[in-house]
Image (cartoon, rainbow, N blue to C red; front, side):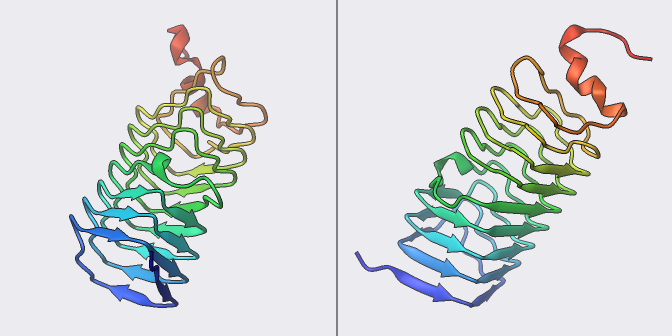
Amino acid sequence: MEVLTHYNKSFNKIVYSEKETKNREFDSCNFINCDFSNGLFVSSSFTNCVFTGCNLTMTKFNHCQLDNITFKESKLLGVNFSSCNDFLFSLKFDGCILDCCSFTRKKMHKTPFINSSVKDADFSECDLTNSVFKNSDLTNTIFSNTNLKGVSFLTAKNYNIDPERNNIAKAKFSLEGLVGLLNKYDIKIE
């Protein structure tokens, strides 16, 4: 099976929604204002790539490698990152919409979620050790059997984390955010 390789290329305003892409390698590529919504990437690899201002709503990455990928000001509604290969899985998010995304069972050490909307996302059984949720909204996001060791929630908001079902050792929370750890106890904090 032949693999088509793209190295150090820029893709500007490409509209590739609802299309399938198989067996491609993208290394050190930039995707700017592209539309991949409802698209399907199969057995493809992305290494050291940056997506800026892109629409990846409901895009599928089946058996894909995402290694050192940065998403800036991009929309990734409903993306199931759980279907990506675990090997070298490494992402960064800045100013993104990640609502309804699934990261179930992914190892995501030191992942930055900066100025992003991460509502209704699922981090069940995920390892987020030393990750950062900076100025990010975590409304209705699921943390279940999640390793949150050393994670910074200092400027995150609207999270609901059960300390009995998640490892929160050395995680950082603001005083105002402590209520997100106590919701299950139905107590009033004044």
